[in-house]
Length: 109
Length: 112
Image 1 (cartoon, rainbow over the protein chains, first blue to last red):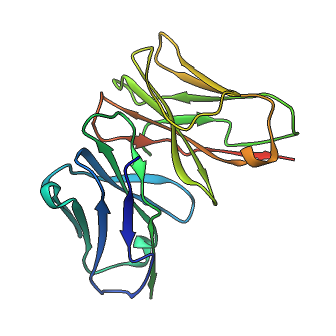
Image 2 (cartoon, helix red, strand yellow; image 1 turned 60 degrees about the horizontal axis):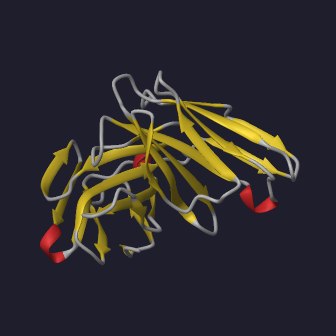
């Protein structure tokens, strides 16, 4: 199956800092989504972004499908940004969303 | 609140038993997905239904089965439960294929 690698595995930030999370994938995709799993376990869809750039408040994401990677930017981080960020992709000839192992973000006040 | 509901929130049962997890998708969504999240396997896709028909199958064991009903709610049946089946089971829904997926709060299954 498709390989999804996320980096870094862990990130500790001071409140107010900016950060970049990366997602590399091993095959062509036509579906890429970013999710945030909060400390209570809820999975929240942040972006549906198979290509291009999107912004939502302090978060933005860019996917360069031809180079098989996506980036998630968190600006002016807040303690509520803590949790695990997952990248998930679906191959062009598939209907299965494959998740990376996630990046665990801890934002300290 | 994603609009996807799952019941029950928690389930504790013994090995060898059978359980049913329920999911109601967001209003208007035709696709329902089931995922399993465990510490050792991470988030794994199990199965997808679209408007009542099975669309895709992932790493779903033969002891597990699912269906989507005419009102679009879905059930995941887990039988002959083993200790290793203990996990968080999520349901998600989307308008159609290759669209943003919205997750329910999950059902935490503990097999003792």
